[in-house]
Image (cartoon, rainbow, N blue to C red; front, side):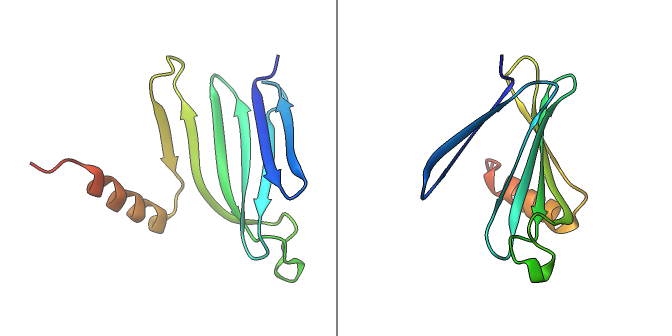
Amino acid sequence: MAQFYAAIQGNRGEATRIGTASSGIEGHIRGWNCGVYVEGQTVDFDSFDVTATLGSDATRGGMGARSGVDLVTVCRSEDLEEFEITLANNPTMRAAARELLAAKEPTQ
């Protein structure tokens, strides 16, 4: 049975892939100058790591080169009631997330 399912849509229609708990699943979605690499794995629970990439421009180290900027890790607790999102060690990302969360908090 598939633990992971991926679907992607482009100008040639949809493509899908499955992954097991032992194989995991990964994908790279990119434009010319930037992209994201997503890796799903299961240890005790499913989690996904999202990393910024340099896109497809081979002159900039592209064609799958990771920028080294880990963005987030997303996982869901076994009781399926809440998500845990861990921001990577990136001060700009953490500051932006704090601002976003502060804006969504109810005012008294």
